[in-house]
Image 1 (spheres, rainbow, N blue to C red):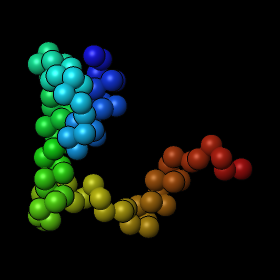
Image 2 (tube, rainbow, N blue to C red):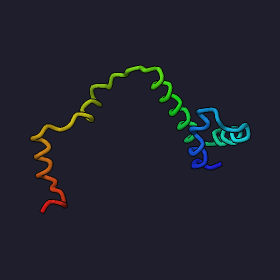
Image 3 (cartoon, rainbow, N blue to C red):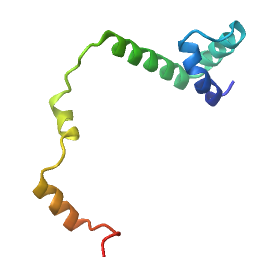
Image 4 (cartoon, helix red, strand yellow):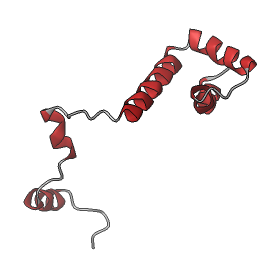
Length: 87
């Protein structure tokens, strides 16, 4: 089984809707593929967090990544990096 095949079956694996034969193939792939193991683990953890309705605060340093720039800063950036679509 390839990683692409594994990822195509990930939802079914998580939903426990694969045949025993397919489950065995998926487990065999996971034994030899750290990438897919991390993907499965991360996906399961994301679903757990979503279902628990837990709210997590963002660290202060990451908040600025989601804050839109002020108008003067955006205008200055637009002047410095003019779009190729402007005439």
